[in-house]
Length: 316
Length: 299
Image 1: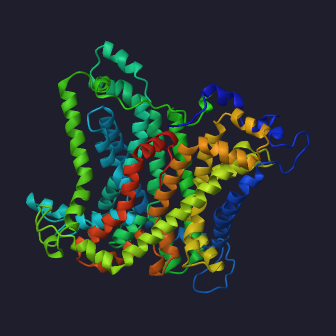
Image 2 (image 1 turned 180 degrees about the horizontal axis):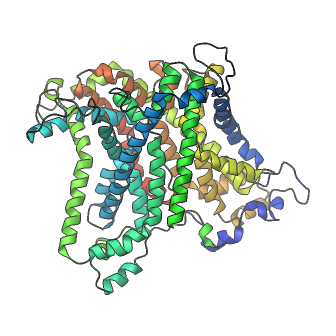
Image 3 (image 1 turned 90 degrees about the vertical axis):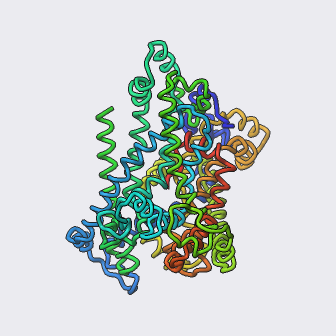
């Protein structure tokens, strides 16, 4: 049961600070205030926010201009050296390339399959909760559990994938050991694991569509395909924009499953940029350089989000 | 502005009843049969890895390691589960996961609901600016913070402690924002009555606002718990002591050590997944509704 105000009440209320009555409500009638009431509620959050979010961001930025290292405590300011090095570092470019490939081959199916799942479940066939559970359950699993299960499925001799190919009379595939295949295997695992979230977003959007269009279409004698193409899909445009944007941002940040499955191999062919940051910082002890690479990547993520916003806004 | 400002208005209708489904599929037989087949095939593909894992986990190692497409190759046995539980590590990691995810959830919910109430009802100077900074922080990828946070933990001498795993996870700007939007929609008349009776601000928050917000607070708690339970990168980086590891981290470190013991690795995977599957079965409606209405979640 969701407790919500009737729409009118909220609209009338408006933001708290804009209403003159507020001060009285907090028992400070009349007096002009500098530290108004309510601040004390926000203080605990501000404390952890500054300590564990603002400070690390600022500190990380500063580190990216130093030769900070896990191995030695003395650090020196090196200006833009780390950034210059990162631009000339082939490993930065190849890991960025891997990240881009993963984002491309995972995002498209993650949007399209989620849409297909939601349309099928929403069509009202019996067994709703079974379908919802089947599609959403993998999303609940910890990454290690997902990778354990899929390592078993991808196992060279006994794994389900190769044994299935065997019964079809096909050669076994090096799912995680073949450079040409490994990234696709990781993308398939990721689609299985995370599609449930996009599926729920689509399902929610479908359930909020007004049925009047369909009733009109039914009167006009439009068939199932016609309704799908002319009513349902156009109505889902906004949701698709949202899902696609969130998905691209999520895919760009891939690290966990790749690190556990392949450690970026074979031959660094699946190493994403965030794993390179980890390798440089925590295995190579070069925290300053690792920070510079991660801030470059963050800048790139911001550019990608802005471009996406632009693209989708123009289309609207 | 208009009523569109109302967050969380229950826009959803109940799922289409079977009789109504003709709205989407029409009255033809063919679309219905096609949709049903596609749905069944997709669901089977999505459930297959689970079925395969469960079947492997209840066999002996020899049977699991013998070739064959049939998931059941030998006699049913719970050997793998017994061996894992006897070894003890998994139970320690499960305890750590419960403790850490529980404390992260508790602290996050307390800190975030208080802040959201302060942002919603407060009149202190700088409220808008602070709120804007909080919302902007939603965009910061957590991975950006890993290196400087680790340095910070070294500085505070917290590496390899529960505190190091827990504290950085309690900052949840997204949850503050979602809760604030919900609090904004609660009519103030109820609170005013209590204030006139002399209730303190804290009293109003505790006995009027919180009880009205139980659904959204529960949704936030569930998602924070799932997120903390599944979190891998941060606990992985900040813990080296096997006695402090969470389940996902512990399982990753022994993955290679399992060698060819497939039954055991599947059994441990399923044991680690069990708590979340139970949470989902208990709160299915709430989880689905909260993702739907708030769009929260996401990893």
